[in-house]
Length: 456
Image (tube, rainbow, N blue to C red; front, side, top):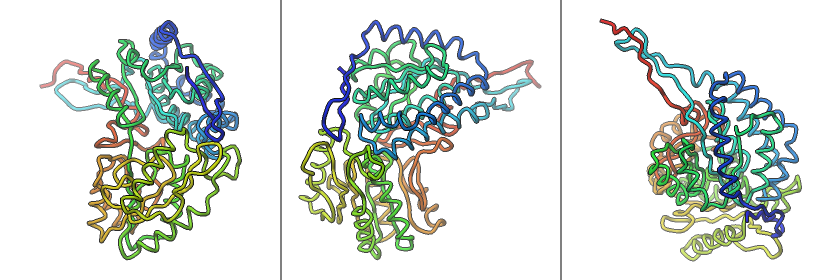
């Protein structure tokens, strides 16, 4: 049974029977059938559908966002913003897909030679709960505009979100089988990955889950894109604008109650400004309102599940026991729901949980660095490599960015995902890229065409 629990109350709000093997078969067959006709459509026809989907979501941003708030606790303002950002992603690929996939002409001994980008077939997206709409569109908008069809296996804790996304496509006139939600418990997804009709897999989630999906896909010789966890560093050097850095890092750390792979987690500060930065972060975090995610004024909603909150608290307690100083928060609230306060840990060092592990919640770890070189060493001292930020002069920040082991680096700004720019990680944060031109090229056949006669 797929069970959605409102994390603000701890009460079950929805239970859905998983798809039977017969239903899964029908959906796979429908996706394969739809691909035969969808691949023949023009970019203009595909764009018309994506724009209709975007328009529908913008018109229904509040009720769609309310499903996220109910099932995984996203604050109302953020939920509405996520729906609108998802619509933007659909519009972006509707506008730019044809250009991204234009043939690339290359000189050779042929009269004409080029690479054309052709769709692969049905693509499976395996998605987590923390950004139910955005992650769905990050996967499906480029895949659909490339001429593929999509099957979405969403997290079993957000079945209402999965159904709502599928309903948006149906209401917008999508052909039958073009975009479908697979309502499955996680162990049941392996046969779908292995099914010959699935041509590629996109996975967002934990490193452990990504490893399992990658192994299955590789054993079937299928391409996969993995966007996994992160323990993202933010380097704050002594010449940074500390006021702006603190405000932006506060926002980065608490979006979605801190349950974000690309959130700033380890804030590494050069020694001369360390104490001041700790105090600025304390003031920023202390001003936030923790509470009911259905209210406009709420800044931080609940953690999505009780087990996730317990794991976060374990990491905090273990870090304090290891010598970290708790400046703010760090205590489990009394009462219903899975709330956790904005927490600031100072004097965090390598080896502590808050340094080594991904903290999926509103917990910021402050780390003292002696100088720029030490800050870089600390930033790269992780098995992850998803995203990072640098706060300094633009010139110094850009120079340092090339030395950071991460898939994306923001200089004097918030780390975010943007339809116009590629996003993804290295090391144990995954491989492949989503979004931008790189994202749509992930699931196409880059077919070389050689046209004779051969030239002398």
